[in-house]
Length: 208
Ligand SMILES: Cc1cc2nc3c(=O)[nH]c(=O)nc-3n(C[C@H](O)[C@H](O)[C@H](O)COP(=O)(O)O)c2cc1C
Image 1: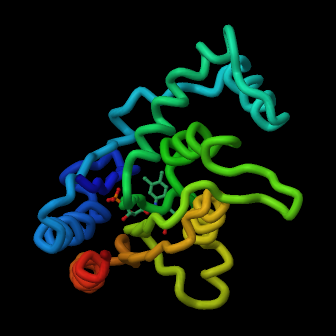
Image 2 (image 1 turned 60 degrees about the horizontal axis):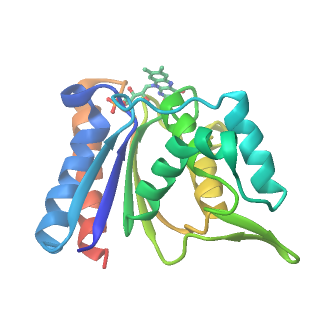
């Protein structure tokens, strides 16, 4: 059975604007793909491992092309479990607000945990090779402000960052759906959520 991993990076639950859009996506997705399971990974509820010095040491061992053993291997068990959970999915949905022009820290911590050499990417003579092949990602984002003008776009470190970091892992087929502006009045908020919900349904229906 194929699996969509829904990674949630807002702590706001029912108050979340991002999740209102994601719900529309998931409703359409489940109708279109009745055979798929959807697994939720709520990063604000998850006890993510912190990158202690031992875990960071392990990363450098892997970067040096060696395998982990002994203490370092043990220290990496939680990291490997998160990587495996990610890799077991066939497609991804990330629900994330913009925080300080970028992503919330729990999503950054998750990325720091899972994007690892040997598992997600490797160095070759011709450069970096992403190891996560043929998997699609949808990112549903919401923002208090609006980042559409050339000037405002320069402040958006959310979309370019997520494209770059998952691109490094080989996930290059990424659809972004953005609800914005969310904090400039209720009427525009409602309208922009509805527009994003329509785009989210379309995206869910066109995923194969
Ligand atoms: C800590 C924090 C930082 C934020 N930083 C930004 C920001 O840099 N730019 C912006 O447009 N909105 C910012 N916002 C507003 C949120 O992006 C916006 O309200 C969003 O719709 C919240 O999504 P949610 O309801 O799904 O949590 C911030 C909100 C919080 C709580």
